[in-house]
Image (tube, rainbow, N blue to C red; front, side, top):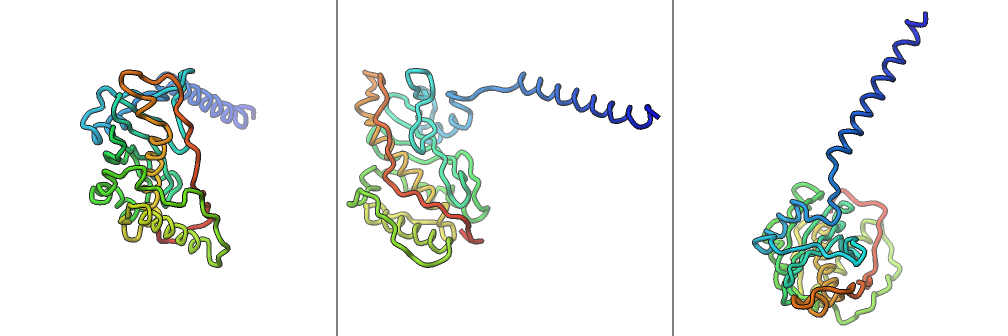
Length: 244
């Protein structure tokens, strides 16, 4: 009776425990902590932006932790040019993982998309060169409207999706008023606006960090740049429609 009812479950449990132990051992043996390391994806992004990743390093705080700012995961620097690793929301939360290059002249040198989780055939179109190239040469001043303070939202009626679309339209109108007009991908307003937000985040970080003053090649960096403070109102939606 014991062998028939008790032994099989015990044997199965033992097998599961052994398998779990082997998985844990394998994970610990192969896991590599990439924190503060320029990964292959970052290297590929730097090569796409500047032709080579040689000379770039990931900036860190005095305690050895990675230097980060609001919306910026890491900053790569070669003493002259910068690249900002940013994860932005498109149609999908965190659907845009990009590297935005800002040259020594303070203008965007290019945008490299490392991973994208947007709607296939719609949001994924933001990785097309024709769309990305419009950001080349854009400066911080091109993304700032005359009204620096955030505009408080007025009460409006409509579904959550309609209100979100209205907010995006206002942002796109704001890009035109600031001197830069975003040519959004048709049917992918969320993804297009996410890319624009990523570029603005990089340029804001560059401006607020005072790259020229803090990271002059002959001086190096000795203290943290000015922290990036949010100046834009964050819009949260509960649901989204079928279309972007």
